[in-house]
Image 1 (cartoon, rainbow, N blue to C red):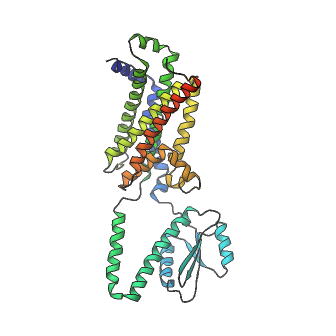
Image 2: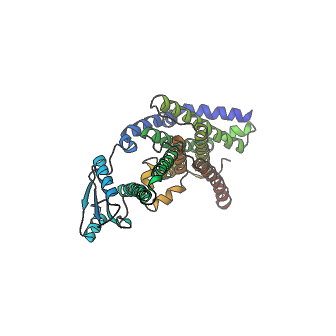
Image 3: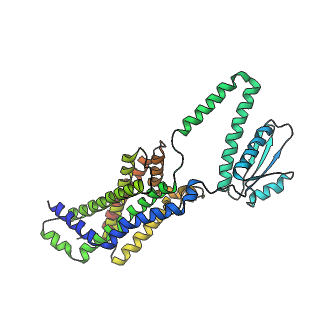
Length: 379
């Protein structure tokens, strides 16, 4: 009964704060809409990363891959506008690739092909192009071998290859729109901002001396902390519901068939955000420091989690591609995208484990700090 009364008080105080309500419920709608429209071209693939690019190549005499490569070259050039230039001086061609003036250098030889990429770090268009070349020439080599050894079985091989690609393609839709991606990414971001509201509420209990009135009602500090955590959870549920309805009926975002698991992932992040707010509210000694501390934490976690730019871009940056995996939001966004596209993996379990594990780490860290340094508590 006491806990319910405390929770009622928390909700009334929260909805009286117009700034918090606007920040947590109006801002995410505007953010998702703006980012969804402004980055629509990047996420939908309307931007051609090969446009204006140049591929250098050389073909050695009597290469059985020559015909397959020439067919690929003509089709790829027609579809993307990429130019192909045959070279005679390999060293100069390699230098152009290293300077970024050419996507790659392909040497078609008797045994297959050699793909030369920049030694200064392979750009994204080269990585994608390399994957396409490998798949194309591998398939060509398979067909060519079958024709040479057992021509009568070619039809069976082609059917098997087609079945394999259909099976792999049916695992998921393989891509998300800008509205889908930023619906999930910005929802994760705004859920983290629950921590600022909770931290300020925790800090205010001491500065406003409301803790004394609470104690007179025979409530203890643990119940007070639990009421703060439940408040954060309620705010998170309202945010998820609001964004789901807005994105589904206004932006026409399809959340897919894994909605219950997606909600579980988001609720795990909500628990993390609530505990983060409680811990910061307990540890910080000045009110003005709460916002500074949480802004730094949230921006860092969200930047590594893909809230300000597509995850696929972050994954292409050396070293950073490993660092971002320590962010709970990285796993949350990865899980949401995977679940949305129907891809089967363990990202959802990892995301929930990461959020709850980080929550336990926060609680343990607070306990240790309090014991070692006599850290602040609501009492």
